[in-house]
Length: 316
Ligand SMILES: Cc1cc2nc3c(=O)[nH]c(=O)nc-3n(C[C@H](O)[C@H](O)[C@H](O)COP(=O)(O)OP(=O)(O)OC[C@H]3O[C@@H](n4cnc5c(N)ncnc54)[C@H](O)[C@@H]3O)c2cc1C
Image (cartoon, rainbow, N blue to C red):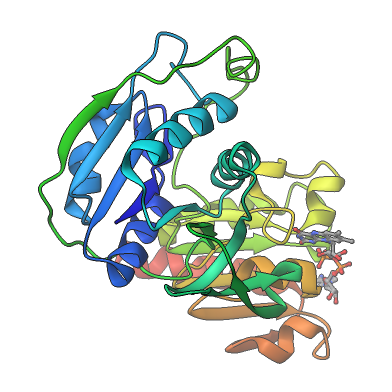
């Protein structure tokens, strides 16, 4: 049996959890899931193959609490003895699984792109922002691993999805780190990680104002805006929009890079895009070498033309 840790944020199941369930089904037909506090996602998990969804219920587990969740997972491992425990290779998934590994004094393979069950386990891992693929073996009685987002597409496969609650034994130290309050702007619109279209800007945009063109283009195309790290460092756009090794990793159908050079740290976040369009005054910029469509030109001249065409097409 394989146990999958579900990542739930305010009632919404992280889509990466569905990708992990899909990968788990390919390893073992018996897939079960565990979630902290929130049974509302059980049906969605079942639709992707979770035969049983174990819900950790505790008065202190009301929002993200990494160590407490890990403690609950460890207690469940004790009663279920799964062959492997998998989670999404997201910041939260990696954090909880790191606690699980520490509690069990067991190895953890993070950001796996493929897993083969056996003795030892074999895993491929994305390293150095995805620039290096590492083939490793893991010698342990049970595999603890996280799966790189978008390493596999989520495929539905209905299962029973029986819900079973359990009460983890938690102490104050387990609950010392948890979300107690949220401040700041609420997330709106299409999520960057899951957007089918990302229109992204770099230093070549020249300042915050021209990003209005990207906002408009993204709205017409039903997508969202991304950016390079230079842009967030300059304060032109929020960090939540940064694409790359230290930002969000995206895999849209269409990625439009405007005035972005294509540093390896940026490409680490967008190279899984199905179609990459780059607009850059420098035809030799690295991003132009990997783009499916490379437009050698000034964004300030080209984007207004592109926007006009997009507006006309959407109006027609
Ligand atoms: C540890 C580490 C982690 C990092 N993580 C990230 C990350 O997650 N994401 C990320 O993006 N970066 C990251 N970086 C930074 C990265 O190395 C680059 O510095 C950054 O991506 C460059 O951003 P840029 O392409 O916008 O700027 P530049 O590299 O300065 O490129 C600007 C581009 O715009 C073009 N241009 C200029 N004017 C115009 C115009 N008018 N029209 C069209 N094109 C024009 C130029 O030809 C150039 O190619 C990281 C760096 C480190 C060291």
